[in-house]
Length: 321
Image (cartoon, rainbow, N blue to C red):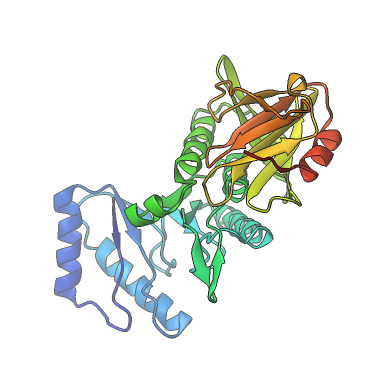
């Protein structure tokens, strides 16, 4: 596919429109995406975009799926794209704000489907840590990203992902973010989650964490973020799993840390994001010490309920070397 964006404040002439349509046909593109032109005046910008996409689409010499751009009276897309706002890309570190953006995009998806138009959520970026208003800010976090992916799975909707090499290199969580993206898309495209389970996931605000298992299908465990009071650099999700409790941990800005929980190492199983066993550390007084890094660490506690594990996670503290 190819994406076209008209210049702000300028109308393309017939020769330009014909040349663009000819290029699309000559290259054999099956997907033609239109981007908004920007510039002052939303109404004028929409009119310019509608005229531009109509000018190109009516000159095509072969069938193509049209994506994005404002519909006009004489042209309607076969596929759309929705986000919370034109610039509402996930900057990360926003917590509830990011989730609100996702829920707004899902609401717009419902509006398009009511008009018999399918759409994807996005585009979303894997943004690295960056300064905002002169202060450092975290990049996109695993729990934020997983909220988006779970909503897309629940409503059987693709996610549009935009990644630049520079942002990928600067985001320490990028490999784990992409692994989650791949895992959720495999579940969605492969129809491996039942309609009944997807229906139960559609309530706004419900969160899940994906537990991969080497010898069985992955499980979506209901979970929620839990703040660790003594270590703001480590993030955690806690939920229920197979009659017990599960927690996932990662470092918000990368790096490594050791986290002590008031829990016996013999009451837990520790695994990485691919369900490979991680050797547990223990303190001198036989307490569990977790080696937390940018890759997601999973803690499975079959003998605890979620409330008990959540209390332990809240009171966790950094361990010495």
